[in-house]
Image (cartoon, rainbow over all chains, first blue to last red; front, side):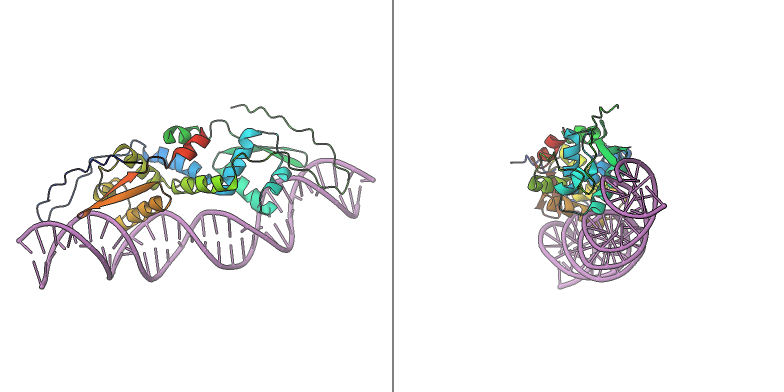
Length: 117
Length: 117
DNA sequence: GCATCACATCGACGCCTGTCAATCTAAGCC
DNA sequence: GGCTTAGATTGACAGGCGTCGATGTGATGC
């Protein structure tokens, strides 16, 4: 838990000077940050996170009507969440007859997972 | 890229029956999903994600006035983002005189990182 | 004292979010 | 054909978001 704080010994600025020049920069560039933030945002809802959890472990084997009773939300709301996950490039679906089978796209989470670890 | 879809051979339901019983459940329970979604949501903005990136690599060594020029946003907006990260339990700060030093809390990202990998 | 600094908070602005009931669409059964 | 089904879409609602300029706060320096 302890954080090793190495406080930079800030010297008093000459009165009227700006405080500091930036000496550090992100390793993650803007575009990569935008991509990863998009994925993180899509995972930023408990229902969607649990959806991804189910789908990761049962790719292509679960139809939407099986997902609805798992959550305390209406069918349109579930459909809305799945749409968001699709828009973020995390899942996709195949339709067979009346049913729709969702699955997690294999590499969708890798960039974020790699950065987090 | 190819996903191995094992479509469950849905049998025709007797007319008037509900379609399916749920046969799968999330491994991640609701509370854990809420916790992880909270972290993911906080990372769901490019500025905040880059902030965490900088702070992870320079814990306790960066004051806020060094962060402002890294991003194309005003100082109040940056302060707002830091507040969100604090609320999500991802960062904390120490104040020394005029300056505030932020750092990423050591275990804050572990649960999400573990689930993602 | 008073001015200046680093940072936080406030109030406002448009926009996006999660949710629902109602409706639409396309496929299957009779 | 007409009815039923699985799922998507629409339109509405309250509430949250990211952003800014203006202001507040607490410490430093003269």
